[in-house]
Length: 145
Image (cartoon, rainbow, N blue to C red; front, side, top):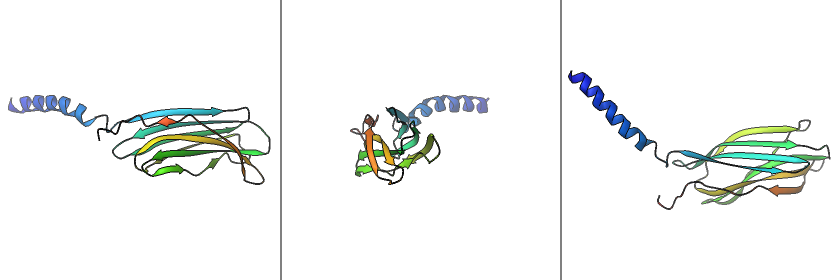
């Protein structure tokens, strides 16, 4: 009988403690943005994490919609405690119309992020133009941390 009552007490305690462990500080929340034009399309979905601060996962998709002598590239830009950072460009490989990547970023507290979809000269490698997405703000309020 004593074992049975101990198991019941342990189960009751677990129902109280489990929600406390799964606090909003440990959870992840996501944001999403797209950029679209006649010759290109880009989409990024970002999962924001806290404790530790990280963007995880980052789902990236780019599409080259035109055979115009340009390659399509996409790059993430963040603003936070590390300042304004422009991350490396990812390009749709030659001969393909689209590409996707999944990655993460751990760079301290990030206030907001956005991305640029760029047209890059296929022969020169020079960026011809870029269009920025809407700014995706960190869904967590750090004022109480």
